[in-house]
Structure formats: C-alpha cells, structure tokens
Image (tube, rainbow over all chains, first blue to last red; front, top):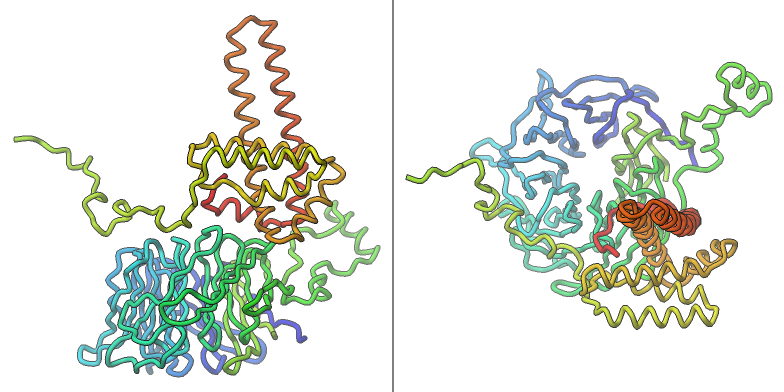
Amino acid sequence: MAAPEVHLLFHHPIADHSFSGDRSLLAVARDNNVELYKRTGNKFNLKDELKGHDKTVTSVDIAPNSGKIVTCSQDRNAYVWEPSPEGWKPTLVILRINRAATFVRWSPSEGKFAVGSGARVVAICYFEEEDNWWVSKHLKKPIRSTVTTLAWHPNSVLLAAGSTDSHTRVFSSFIKGIDEKPELSVWGERLPFNTVCGEYLNNAGGWVHSCAFSPSGNVLAFTGHDSSVTVVYPSGPEQPPSAIVNISTQLLPFCSLIWNGENEIIAGGYDCEAYRLQGDESGWQLAGSLESKGRASGGVQDESALNMFRQMDLRGKIQNDTQLKTVHQNTISTVRVYEGSGSTLGKCSTSGVDGRVVIWTV
Amino acid sequence: MTTTNWRTINVDALDPESSYNFDLSTLTPQLAPVSTSSIQQLGNQVRQQLRSGDAEGALRVALSNPPYGAAAGEGGKDAHLATVVECLQSVKLADVGRVLERVYQGPGGVECLDVLVKYLYKGMAQSTSSTTTNSRPASSQGPGFSQIQARTSVEGGGQAMSVLLSWHEKVIEIAGQGAIIRVMTDRRTV
C-alpha cells in the first residue's frame, strides 16, 4: 500500500474540500472564503480566492464535468462560481432560508444541487433559463431539525438527508423539465417531489453526521454521534427494509463516510484516523485503520539513546508527546472520493481541523 | 383599552412551523411501558441467579432488559439500578475483566455494556446525591450523633463509588470511548 500523500495547507480548520474532475484544482473552505489550490508537481499552491460570503463557509463542491463551484455559508447564501476571463464569477442562488446553510452537493447529473440548512429544509436548486437565475424548491416535511448532511443517489433524483433530529431520510427531488423519469428502484417507482422513500433512526438516536448511498444506489449508510454506523438494505417500495445493520464501534464518532464498492465503507472522524468497515447484509464489522501501523509509528521518530538523552536534556522529557501518531493531527471532517471508477474506489481524500488534506490509496 | 406586554408573548406558539408546536418525543424511539411489578419480578429472577452463584448470567439478564419506559416514574428505574448494583458488588474485583469480556463477546454484548455504563453513571450520580441529602438533616441534630451518621453514609457512598469506578475502568477498556459517547447521546435513559 502506497504511503498517503499529505498536504499541510495551513494551520486552520478546513470545513470542506473538493477536487476538480481532473484533480488539478483543490477548493478548500477556510473561514469566510474558499481558497483554490493548483497542483504543481507534488504540491498544491494557492492560486485564487473566492470572496463573497460574509460568514463561515460551511461547504464547497466542484462539479466534475462542468467545473462549476458551488459554495454555501452560515450567511444563508449559496453562490455558483463560474470561470470567466476576468476570474471566477459568482451568481447568487435564491435559497429562501432563514438559518445557516450547512451542506451543499451537486447532483451527479450536475443540473441541480441540494443545500441543507438549519431552517429544517433542503433547498433543491436548479437553473431557470428564462430568468437566468438559480432558483430553489424546498424539501420540508418531515424534517424537524437542522440538516447536517446530504448524499445523492446515482440517478440524481433521490437524495438522502441526515439531520440533528437523528433521522436519515431518503427524499425524491424530482423536478419537471430538469430530471428524466428515474428507473424503478428499490426506493420506489412514482417519485413526485418531496416523496419520502425512507426514514431511518439509529439505536441510540444520535444526530447524524454523514450519510452515503452505495455505488449501486441500493444501500444507504449513515453515521451518527453515537459512534455507530448504520447500513440500510431496502427491500422495495413501501416495504420495511430487508435488513438494518448497526455497527457500534469502540471509537469516537465518525464525521464522514464514503463507500468503496458494495461491501466496504471508509469513515473518518474524531479519532483523527480513517477506518475501514466491511460486511454485507448479514453483518458488518470494523476492519481496521486505513493507516498502516508501521507508518503510524513514524510519529515517534528515531528512538536512539542519543536522541532520548538529548530530548531529556533539552526539554526535560523523554518523548515528544504533543504529536498524535496518526497522519491527521485533529478531527477528520470530510472524506471524499478522489479517484475511482464507478463501483470501486482507487483513492480517497480526507480533510480535517488540522488544515491537512491527505490523499489515501485504498 | 387593555395594554398587552408584547415582549412576553411567546411568538413560537403562534408559528405553526415552529418546533414549539411539535411533539419532539415522536421522533425518538418508542419505549414500551414497563410496569413496576415486572421490574420487581426481573429483580427477583436476577437475585435468584446471584444466589446460585451465576453472577455473569445475572448481570446479563439485568442489562438486557433495562426498563427504559418504566411507567411508575423514576421509582421503577431506581429499583432496577439497585438490582444492577447488587450484581456488580457480587463479582470479585479480580474477575471483573473476565466477566465483562464474556458479556461483550456474547449476543448483544455491545448493547449490554452500553447499558452498564448508563447504570454506572446513574449509580455515581445517586451515591453522591444520597450522601449530601443524608448529611444535611443530620447536622441539625445533636453533634455526636450527626457525626457518626454522616461518616457512615460517606463511607458507604465511597465504597459503592469505588466499586462503580473500578467497573467503569474495566468497561471502557473493553467497550472503548464509543460506549461513553453512546451513553451521552442516547435518549433512552435508565
């Protein structure tokens, strides 16, 4: 397994990160701005800044094909940024929300995007050609609290939303004229806007940090603040799921998760380390860390006697105990697909509170 | 004309969209009501197992059936706490790790240990509050008597606390920090 590629961008929390389709551009949400980094060789150099939000930017997403960037912020706004000869040009999106926007993701079709918010709604935004304007439609019922996370189904119609009311719900975000009629799936057949296709709660009722559809879109996984991951296998429309598997871990909660194939999940969170979970409908278990243990001990540098006495002499202590043995030195807030073809994942990227973006070979 | 103090109006009550007008308990898992008699019955069953020397089995039974939805208020829940603490005290300190390991490996083990952590914290909260309530009325009585009573209750609480603390240490060794997080998050209280 190749060593992870570590990029320490700055000493400041990264709320969210996103790579462009060709992975040459990296967008990072830092405070009120989004910073764009360009890859040159093995390094990422600051190239541009997207300024426009006047409160903390909570989420950023680059559409892989069109290259458009969408950002959302606690100032209740979202912008779509398009490249132009004079630099990045922002377009304001009419979200109609009265609380912070918390999370944004492009749909796989890139024709629309979803914004989660503290106003207990998910705004589904799409471009109105006539008015040259991004407008939104709200998914409202039955969300009872802040939407913390969203995940698109591959068909761009179904959307999973995790909320602090500890439920993860699967909605239809079908918009006439934008979406094609989705094929029949386990989640349902006729899917008018705001159809609730599923509503799931974990055992302890912890608020949801992250959710994701499996590559086929037929399985949903979500993780909450009760340090558990729940995997839902739906059996068909209007029917109870054929299996709900809950894995309670010994670890601190996960903040973000992605699928690798249909039988593996990669999740990272407050333990500053990314973990693998493996299993199927009959059961799941934690299958260890993404970090190879040999490398992890690299945090404890050479243990020579000379070094030990020098440390004792200089600092009055034997070991440098201010460093974690993990690659990330603080909570991992986002795990994303970096490179992958359809069903399997080649590489994934993580970013966290320590200002690092790390690319892992899975 | 009547003057209304507009500032005291609860605006949330007037907003049909507000969570004030929404029963949030409908979002949490439904808890089946448990009658006090069934809690006592369970307690008796556990005590019987304890008498026959099967502390591990007794603990497992006590932890698999926590009365989350106890109907008779907190009284029923307290009765079950006493049952669990009895189980804990009947296990020798040297055996704690082994017993926990076996409960953890068994069916529903993770859930069992989460419930145990809940009871440990509840027990800690109670043993401190009971010492304070006991010592307060005692101080108003004669000096000699009050001192003795206060001391015995503190010692009793301290002993119970040390049992709970040593169990806590062992549980966290096995179930990890995840168990603490789950107990803090869980809405099903014991």
